[in-house]
Length: 195
Image 1 (tube, rainbow, N blue to C red):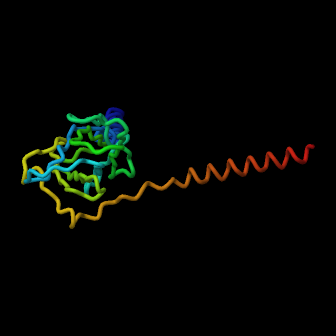
Image 2 (cartoon, rainbow, N blue to C red):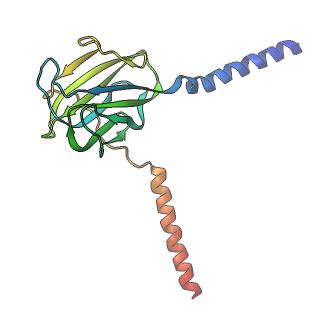
Image 3 (tube, one colour):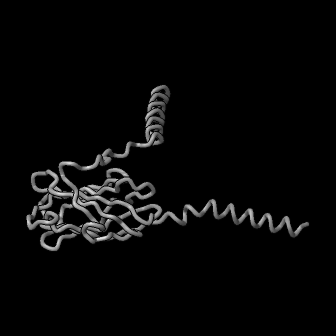
C-alpha cells in the first residue's frame, strides 16, 4: 500500500511540475537579422529611407522584446541618430535624422515560437509617406526570403489596420503615484502642525 501511494505522489508531483513549468520552457526569446535596400519590390526605383515600422501581425503568443530591434546599420551611410522604439508589444518604430540608402537590423522577439507567423514592415520615403511594405512569413523563427511564398509586397494604399497605440501605464503605476503624492502631502501637513 505504501509503495502505491509513493508512486501516485511522485506521478502527481511530476504532472504538476510539467503543468507549472512547461509554459516557461516553451517561452523563449529569439531574433533574426534582416534589412531593406530601399528598392521598391519588383522595380528598379529606389527611395531614401526615413523610417521603418515593424509589425507582428495577427500572431498571438509572439511579441517584440527590448526595443524591438537592435544592431541598426547601413552598408552605404551611417545610422547615427537612429533608434528603435518599442511602441507596443507588436509594433516597433525605427527612425532617425537622415534618409538612408539602406537599413539593416536585428529584430528581437519573445514568446512561444510558432511554426509560422507573419511579420510586416513598412518603409517610409523622405516625404514621410509609405513607399512600400513587405509581409514576411517567419518559419520556425527564421525569415523565409523567397519572393511570392516567403514574402509579398503590400499595397501602400490598402494596408492592414495595424495597432500603433502605445501601451498605457498600468493601474499599479497610477496607484503608486497617487499614494506617493498623498504621503508627501500628509508629511507636509504634519510638518506644518509641528511648527
